[in-house]
Length: 293
Length: 206
Image (cartoon, rainbow over all chains, first blue to last red):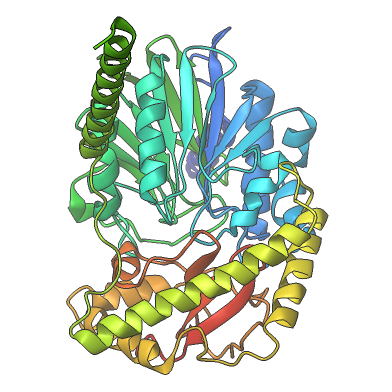
């Protein structure tokens, strides 16, 4: 009788273990829930990635995997695209090799420059900057316009350009991306309040709904600030473990224990997002309706 | 007054009015633009004002040399390969080094200017935000790297963070030059040629 109980216990334990492992596998499969709808604009967001490290390559592999079920057409880069040397071989090791399957599939990368990036990167064809430090482009689907800024040296001429561009933009979604976060719970860097004083009034005045940044080496979705949704996606290759200061009160979701990238989808007035870690965990997801002016 | 002369006078009056309106429009538009905060240190006395003015003239002279060389080099295409970018940078750097072969450390950033910069940086690094600023600058910025004039910016050193609070203290640079930290030295980097135009050693306190 005792032997039967032991066997039964072992069987139950094995069944539970199996279920646990199965659930774990499901969680680690690259997720593509979002709406994943026809005609939507599908993107990925990545920052602080160009290290050439195994972490960068492992996260890149997750991006490739995700692209199979969620075929995003473009990747927004929020800066620190190459760390350290920027010789031809570095462009290969820190960018072309890890993302080769995406580049081969025709995914376009749109870069902004971080504090560690040489300005000559603006001439690098796969970054699609057209030789400019700051630029804007209309997305191929949906009513979306992206504005890439150079936030290390935000000269008055750039700010004037941004105001003119935002004012003349007719798209429903105005999405701005650059390196230094206006809102961040990073203990290392945190919110760039000086830049915020300059940019936020323009964002509010001209209907910006969504802002992607990096610099702090973690993922953070900030609670909407004055109606604008901010993401910090600075762990594409770098990682600063335990650096999110939870006492700021602005964090809606965060991950500072693993690298991550963000998948996003624009469909009408709704932006859906899903953040994925280096191990394939979808640890944050949701949707956001754009600001109406 | 003949009708023709009267017409000419009227035409002049209209022209003057149009010119006045145009000037007023330009003034109005300029006034609407948000005034950017002034960048650079406030001189404490006349000596410092002269030092800053002298520095500005030296920067202008450097930029003139830079532009002359840049104009003589083949232009980088807007969509370049890394090999093209690298080759252009190195050729540019070589030409800058040749053109400045007789220059020495302190010719651009004069000793008086170096003292002024160190003093202002010491103030901000000694403030309540100083430790955080230093942490941000020294992040991924190796110490012990020696910098020399006209040397290529060390390939192995990531370009350092330049916090806005620090930039606000330093005289504004033209598009051709930028400030960076290599270890504890503040360098002026020719960003197109990727060479060190001059530097202030021990700019960041230990």
